[in-house]
Amino acid sequence: MTHRTRARSRTVVLTALLTAVLGLLGLSGAQTATAAPVICEQYGSASVQSGRYVVMNNRWGTSATQCIDVSSTGFTVTQADGQAATNGAPKSYPAIYYGCHYGNCTTNNNILSPNGLQASDSRFGSITTSVSMTYPGSGTYDAAYDIWFNKSRPTTTTQQNDGAELMVWLNHTGSIQPIGSKVGTANVAGATWDVWYGSSGWNVISYVRQSPTSSISFPVSAFWNDVVSRGYGSNSWYLTSIQAGFEPWIGGTGLAVNNFSVTTNGTTPPPSPTPTPTVTPPPNGSGCTATLKVDNAWNGGFQGTVTVANAGSSMISGWTVKGTLPSGTTISNLWNGVLTTSGSAITVKNAAYNGLLNGGGSTTFGFTASGTAPTSGFTCTTP
Image 1 (cartoon, one colour):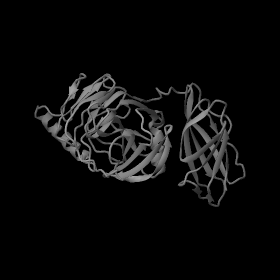
Image 2 (cartoon, helix red, strand yellow):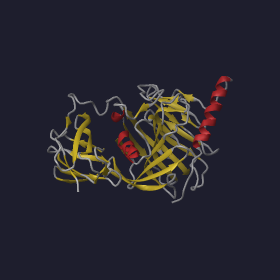
Image 3 (cartoon, one colour):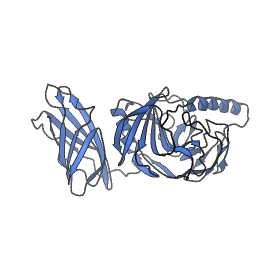
Image 4 (cartoon, helix red, strand yellow):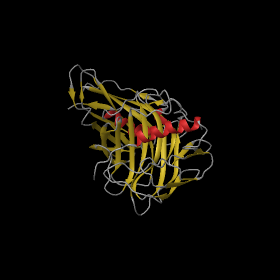
């Protein structure tokens, strides 16, 4: 596959400035529609579900016509003229989003507007998104989430994010690839992903699913935790928008987002009716300790974090955490560690980048699971 670059930020910034000037002059520019129309305007957009989401045409990389038919839950690309070289930037990014995109913000229960949400905020872990898509039989495109982070609290909703662009590629066709180069693999959201890293003046981290899919549901924190563990982001940064759509190079007619949703404030999954437990076993004398904290629980599942700490004063060069899950409980996704299971028993070894712990130092791994949270602790051993 060939390398591609991006010019979207410069184009959209210029468009945002042009739109503001035209608005002051009382002229029409990139307008935001209030109904659910067919949009062919270059940067035309429409609010759906009473402002819960915005659908945008976002034809930033070509002068050729592109039209999208907006529905209450997504859109369909009905015309996609022209093409772009597959070793360069795509034609566009028609998408539906929650949050703010260059001054155009969703308004219905938007916890990201106007200043974003810091990843360290307790509400961040409850943000879950899902999408289902339809792909045509031809064309060159990727089907991807575009999730944006700013390094500091945004002072305006029109600014370009300077932190990270987290892309989640559900599918792609032809000889295209993410910006940058492949830096590893990850097991997230029940699948294996190739991880790419590049820069466009901000970090671009792309997760390319090894087996394509047309639908997905995941907590944003699942991917973000992996980003942070690789040193490409920070939990002090601010989430500003969650977008799902397509980057077409050739063709694109028939691409469709059938359903898109973002749930926040613990609405899905629902909050646990009882306080979530923190399990801290005593040091086991083997050089390290493992402390389980249930961060979030809902009917039928939970998300937990295990803190692995060096209990001594000398560096350790690797750790292994073992535990037993309640009957019927299974881990669906784990990050910052290597998981093996045998029935209800689990073993988590350190990843390649977090096995060295100085005296008194610590690291964490996290996971999501279906079933009941354990009530007894995990044990930790060193080589």
